[in-house]
Image 1 (cartoon, rainbow, N blue to C red):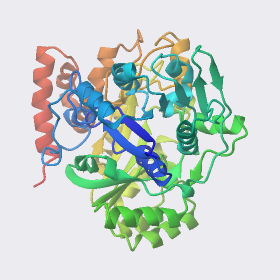
Image 2: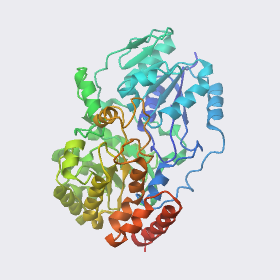
Image 3: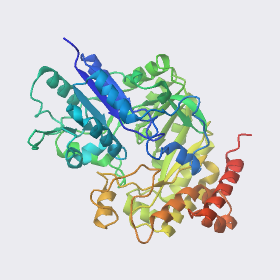
Image 4: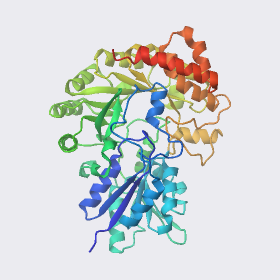
Length: 503
């Protein structure tokens, strides 16, 4: 009896999403249960305008210049033809696609191309969870996974293999041949400690390399928390918690046991030859003090540098120093907006500016090897250019303490309260497609047009670092005409020489 086969599809653009742990976990679960898997990952194909998120960040001075050319190369073949060949040679029994909201339509174009084969198709991910109707209405998609996929995908594959009815599997919306959709209940959350070690062998070796503070490392993502305990209005993590709570399916926010974290770290270090770890928890410092001490003690034996992100109010000097002693290399903090009232009322982040400044300066005093990066968002619904400049002003107060500062466009992700507000105010349509954080602004706001938002995004670091006497010059660089582009390139070159020098 031949093994049942599952083709995993991961639509992605250059530099947009790092190695996806979910795909690697799904593959391992299926392999452990007698299924054969293959992966089609579009990351290194030239697609459309060949958008590269990391290079956009570099262009806008949000990250230090880096060079990945030794580790990765763009494929010269056609992605659609390569996918077609893979389907023909592998002959899968199921096609399973995991997509973020900003890559869904790329993924859908792949599914359209291979729809002629009539293979059952399931789509999961955050977009599928919060906009299942918009996903399953596409004729190329038969099943949508709402919520976590580990158990649901395995049960689906077993049912297909055994010729059993799968229309009642929890977490799945299943479309019948006559177009009717069965919407099943959300499955009770399981322990993330039960997941096996991810199968990163699916991916090309180059996918393991990522830039960090201007250098390139063989970097592995590590899950320590799933979900986030905070309630920011621009984020859809709180909606995950509500989804499971309202369904009586448990608490979505969970912490992985340190025993399981250690097992993963040792596997990545010894088997995958990791050089650097990327702890991708929304708020890594959501650990209690006791848990943090246990993490520090556990990590002493690992010894590799790592990155994490957290919120300013979770930071203490003791925590940072302890983590630094075992490998904390760089940390990212969310500022998001510089106007206290706007940040509290619209964004639902209620920390005072003085507390943000204090936290950043305290971390800077701990002298992390690669310093601090801070994240900011521009183009929130109802925002004005004047409010955006308040974010510039707050960043100027911590400029001497941080290495780099990001300025992203607000993205109205499904599941986030600010998307609902954006639709209500007419800034986007109900079916509006989002782009990634570094892409073009999504909202059409008369008081803050897209071109003005784009201008702030690319000049943000210039406004923060350069003397106010240069602001009239920088204002010209906000324009995307010949003169604006010329001045921006000159200012950008000067910025790199002054602030990114390695000498």
